Image 1 (tube, rainbow, N blue to C red):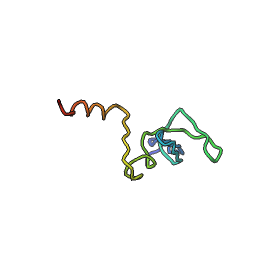
Image 2 (cartoon, helix red, strand yellow; image 1 turned 90 degrees about the horizontal axis):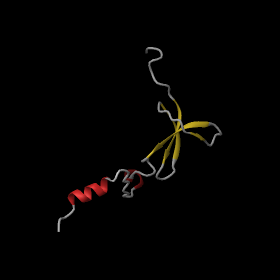
Image 3 (spheres, one colour; image 1 turned 120 degrees about the vertical axis):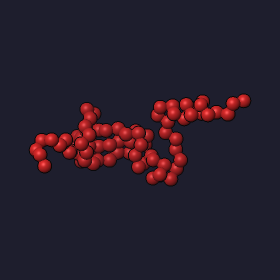
Image 4 (cartoon, helix red, strand yellow; image 1 turned 180 degrees about the vertical axis):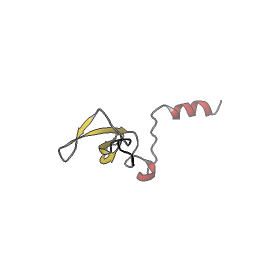
Length: 82
């Protein structure tokens, strides 16, 4: 491998904003936000909309997460006309 062409791979905390579920893993993603983790150290915080804690496939629950008004747009476009 060539030196200094790969991004830094470091510990990062990902937080599901829907359920407040957080997990520490390694990633190349960075963030200006920081969070103090259970081990007392500070790590970059990356917020995500969906994780295994809120995804219907993993939870077994059907849950609509409409972040951009997509459901309303669909209903307006394909609503039954009276």
